[in-house]
Length: 76
Image (tube, rainbow, N blue to C red; front, side, top):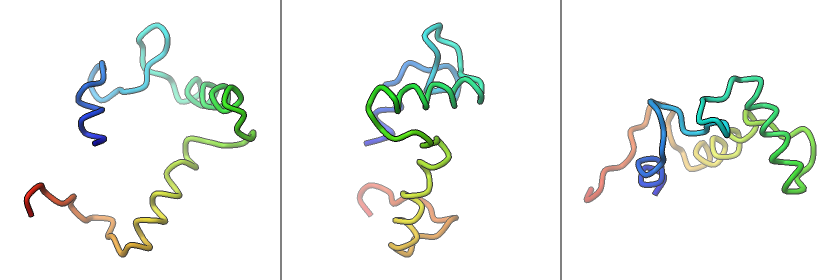
């Protein structure tokens, strides 16, 4: 599902999130955008992009996934 979404996304190279001008975010501007998006949605202050990777990683670890594990292929 994620691969289908990324394949359909208008992007340049490996960049998926771009500014309103179609340019890749700098690290500083993406951090600011994240804070702005959180405020718009009513989420609490202090949430970070770095923090978004922790919950999925914890779920994968609990499911006994390995860091170097290859994704399953369709059809087995």
